[in-house]
Length: 526
Image (cartoon, rainbow, N blue to C red):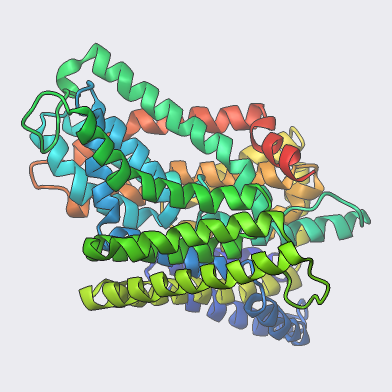
């Protein structure tokens, strides 16, 4: 055994060790890659000129329109969170389900599903739900273990329920990995995969997990009513009147739900690309925040929203490309109507931006979006350099031979990779894992016969599970930071155990029945 033969493995271990010691991930990956590139040159197992591919990779990242969706989705989620639209959504849902046993927990799961999908960032969702929902649940008499478990589990749903920044980056990486696998196999007409495919593929498994959570909460409420009592948060009457329910549905639930469904539906229906849908989501979230900040101006804002819906409808029935010159009279009329609708939308957006800026929300959202996006793309640059050096040292061939040598073929290789990612999830953030691991193992697994969409969904569900696993699950730390001192750490750990079991069950179902992940994208896009 010589150092020359295992330089790539030593590089991986060295980088992983430095990250565990607390060094910044982006600079660690880039620094280790450059250091081992020089070492490889000295040992004769790497050629420095291979790094010339790095500028091309950076240019492809900067010009990748799909990746532009990530900052927009982050902006959308943060705007809904910091403007307290998410808080209104939770409290409205709690009042609607308050008369049911476990109704507040059910509300947390549903709102967690919606907000996790909008935010896509586990920490933000868990902290928000912990600050808003946990004190209310404890005052209502909920078992602290059930309350904390529900919040942690629902806060991690953004890993697999689209639209999510995790799926945006995972889809981009798997697209590249799929191309590599097809080229290596000489299959130039292989199955293509994109972010839209991954969004569609993860929808059913994500909703399946939500269903498992809801079933568990209902079972606990039936078996142990004292652990999940019924309560009407903020109401003095035992039941809400019809007018009160209608008010809650329209003001608290309808607009945010329509926004999220419109963003996801436009992608799945093929009306918009993920980037275009993310832009609609960011603008829509700003209008909702403006509506909450200045309800006295709701007329203009609602008119702008109606105009946007009208534009979508007109675009669906008429071809209004302005570069054309052969417009029919009806098309010409619709073109002028569209100009008016665009003006109404512009007025509403400008007003919403001004209202949120005056309230101080817009500044917070822009700063947070810039900071989070900068962190993510810095890691992506470092991971790209790391993957380039790792391949140049022969790491991809090493991984290929190792995975092919495992018993069970693709099944054995998938079990091994899933286990490694699960363990890495104890220590590393999900973005770090997909940027480091997926470019390395993705082409190999796809080359062994794994469907890229199924592989992406399996990775998403797996990483979601690792966020909950004691003692290092990130979601547990996030909730511990905002939970009252009366909630013990061991209660948080105990509370997530049943949900870990449910997520492992979900992962096993997707593994056993790949059609859960591949059926919808095949139906929509094939």
